[in-house]
Image 1 (cartoon, rainbow, N blue to C red):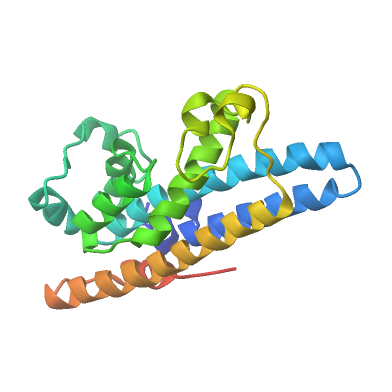
Image 2: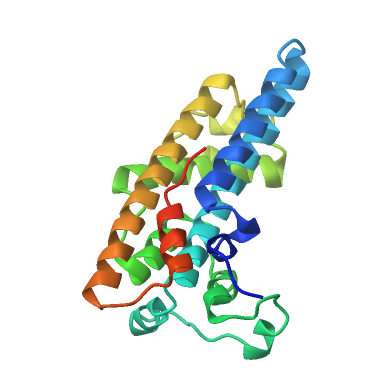
Length: 234
């Protein structure tokens, strides 16, 4: 079966659009709990965890789509020290086992769980840094908050209390008080992440277009449409 431009994307939808759809759902969840303070507090915690998870998924899926559109970038990744080996038999397990789906298999190999790892992978691929130094610091804190909620139920652990950016009293807050995710914190986190995603989609689209032009790579009509779709929004 012949591929279409949307087959280059996870779920047949560009990563940025999937992220925006997920955020709409999170906002609806929060709004639906607006009259129940205790339930809304829990909804904000769960949606905050979801926000960080959906952001990681965006970074992985967007990375995969770039490779699907331009598999020639595998040579660049390899040259820059990234492992691009896959089990070729895995391609046979995919519908439309085609080189233009190899990005899905490659991205599964990599860890997109921190700002440093994301920057390293995107630099190796297209010389793009999704995070500035300041954005990295902000995201590291958001990730620490997410991990505290996931692994400690939000109750301050000793390692969290000792972090320099917190103003906690280590002796009284640790193992007793807990992190509060309010509307302001959720909104600030969302705005930070949206800026990073918008910047990343624009920068990678530009760099990928330049790479294709400079290396005189011919894109099929479907691959060209997929390239254009990298920056789609709702």
